[in-house]
Amino acid sequence: MVTSISLGPTEPSPVETQPLRSTADGLLFGIYPGSGTGGIDPLLFAGPPDDPAQINVALAQLQPPGRPLMIRGYAHYVGSGRIASATPADMLQYIRDGRQLDLVLCYRSPDGDLADWTNFVRSIIRKYGSALAKLQLTEEPNNPDPANGGDGSSPNVVQAIIEGVLAARDEIQRQGYAIQIGFNATISFNPNDAFWNSIARLGHPAFMEALDYVGLDFFPDVFRPLPRRPDGMPMTLQDAVSMVLTQFRNVCLAAGNIPASVPIHITEHGWPTSPTRSYAQQAETLETVVRTIYALRTEHRITHYEFFDLRDTDSADPGFQFGLLRDDYTPKPAFERYRQLIVELSAQ
Image 1 (cartoon, rainbow, N blue to C red):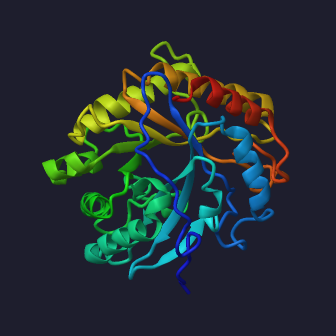
Image 2: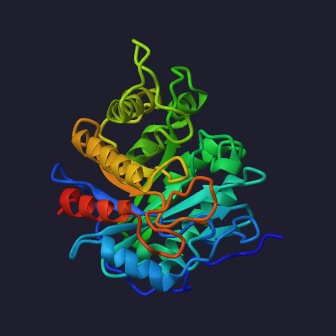
């Protein structure tokens, strides 16, 4: 049975928001602050529930004084104006001290009712707009597998992006908020990708004008091995990251007629630990990926980077554990490495 789930207080405390822009001087950083158990059914994910006090301590350690930090959250829209689940639970409790919310509205409509969807988007802006810095409409709409985070099998998903962006832009202007609007995707190496061709076909000038960014979810060297070079040797991680970013900007976004002026946000990246993936490797991989993104930020107009996720779902489980912290909130080496990277490479 689906129930309506709140993202936090009905009337969030006002948060002074300004348009968040990165410059050539650095990136804007963020993190999903929960785990797999966040606000999802605990019967589906083993492990301890989120501890808001511990989360706020960790976020304060990651955030340099006087600089913003994006807090990423997810809400699953399931039609008829309803949210089936939201994670982390009561996410507005983490929006303080210059932190701002990057909210993902996952599109899991059973019937493709676009009028209901756009009304829902407008209602979220009215209800939570004072805390929002970014609103992402749909999650991985070119990924058709809902079990692995994709909205691509939901009916009218491309139209939901187009109509959602337009409705959001109109509502933001009506309410006088400074909120960036975008959508994200996963990487594709198919030059005839139907998703990007559909974006090009349906994405009229008003949509392109309203679009603030396109996000990229990517997890190099996680779900498949690094690609091989023409000589048969594996690519280095740095070369693989560069290849993905170049493909996304110059092929995927170009196929969708997304202007080069529209920034790319790295909306999800992570590298998990496991019995065969050491804590030290996680820290080293994180640094390599972030520094490669930083080096290419001007060439590909990349302005944001957000890590997935703050803590392990269940550190005793031998499967992949993406957290910078163990499930008891003790840090892995990657936590301190990420903190140092934020201090060094974040936009002033």
